[in-house]
Amino acid sequence: MNEGRENPPAVVLLSGGLDSATVLAEARAAGFEPFALSIAYGQRHAVEMEAARRVARSMNVARHVELTIDLRAFGGSALTADVEVPKDRRADATGGDIPITYVPARNTVFLSMALAWAETLGAFDLFIGVNCVDYSGYPDCRPEFIRAFENLANLATKAGVEGTGRFRVHAPILTMTKEQVIRRGLELGVDYGLTHSCYDPTPEGLSCGHCDACRLRLAAFERMGMTDPVAYVRP
Ligand SMILES: [Zn+2]
Image (cartoon, rainbow, N blue to C red; front, side):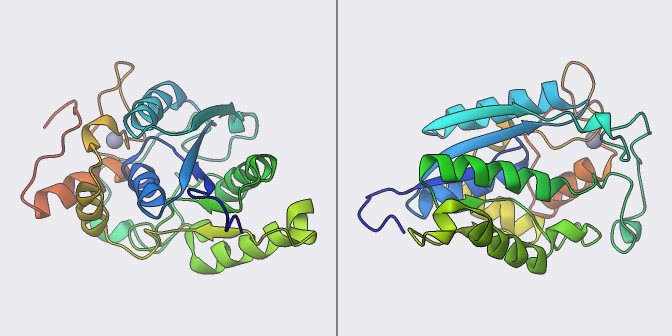
């Protein structure tokens, strides 16, 4: 697998959020040349895409592709349909049941796009910022899912079948807590002020401070004795 290349290419899924920014930095630290893929799939795409662009620029990716796959055509999620994003849920409600912010089959769709680009580039490494600690309810954030997709990648592609390499799906923050993710990212020089996580930002891009995504990152920074550098509607 790209043994001869100094910095083998890798496709990194980049949402512009805290997790994927950290994963991009991990890919670089692991010696890969990152090709960033951002997928706009719902109503938040303008603010998220801005963040993804800032992060990609700050980390000097080889190329940044922005792909629009409008999953609003299907609906079915608070992130793709006109359904209210839950606010101020109790902490113990963020585990267990699959939340309404789950987007049907999202990570399968995303990894499929990353795989298609990787095969085109001659890359065998895909990076995704899934995490099974904070969002235990999402089925496509589990280690079993990552392993299954890796098998699929090797069965489904010309490159996999011809044995020119073996696809690997890297999920470096899979089992990290949000604090561990932030700590690792800071070590790697990630500027979290460039990122965006909120499910329900204002049109100007201010984070709401009350959705699950905001609360998770705010709480993590607070536990670390730090201030989250992104702008919130209310502190
Ligand atoms: Zn929010």
